[in-house]
Image (cartoon, rainbow, N blue to C red; front, top):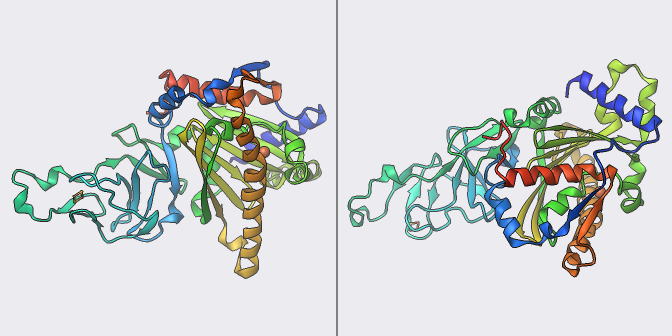
Length: 389
Ligand code: FES
Ligand SMILES: [Fe+2]
């Protein structure tokens, strides 16, 4: 993030704090119908549009550092294997044999010289070329060149691996993120290393889970014994670019910024910065580690949540450093996200069909939930943002 931008955000937070406001307000009170969190037809449409027409983050390059390393996309509805080829290029293929469709790579991660289908032994190079058809004489008229693995457009940018399920052409994550791309560059995401990635199924709609991140209103209440102490009562400002949202939340030491010269201001010393990258990726920037969460719908009421913590290796050296990192991971992953934010979402989901609430009431500090929903609704209606193609 450009320094001038960091200063601009910190000043906005100062102004909010002075005005005794907690969050920049958005629009008006909105009554949002809750059936969008449990209707099958809505999920189907979301899958056909928001999970199809836009680039998706599927991982970080540090998950596959060596040639031949691969991982399988966490979302089984997108059966893709991502592999680093012998030429060091990262590619994504449907993890589906061209003969009769068996899964080629079965383990979630691993290292391969080539893909060998477990069913009848057809083999493919890591660049997707069909190398060998066993009992070739039994396949008269089959030209191997025409049956390479089906490749999806894949880009590596900011150290993140992106695929585009609905495109046959290359795309630009940089263009997709607009001004936020520069933030990721300056935060050095590409140099980070994956510490640990965990996944679990949450019994809540994927949108409900993401929406827990989009307001600071709940922080002093839900997180009163945990996060609340670290933040300035949820003083929070935001920016948007197309369907992406950036939030900055003032930390408890935030007032100290007024005591040092502006040219020494470093936003991560005084605020946490969050990004909701449309549609399902949520980034939290801490000074020395990053939480990268993705939300993959399994059904209207179930979501696969993957959480990948990325860190700066030189900030967590040796046994002591690793123990400190593990402590942070457990606190963030197990306590704040799992036992607080997502436990609340699961409770909400469990009573959605009760008809106690036909709508949820979103106040002025919860306007970003409305914006996020609007972004999904317009994507479902086929309105594309200019950089998404
Ligand atoms: S399905 Fe892969 S070789 Fe037959
Ligand atoms: Fe929260």
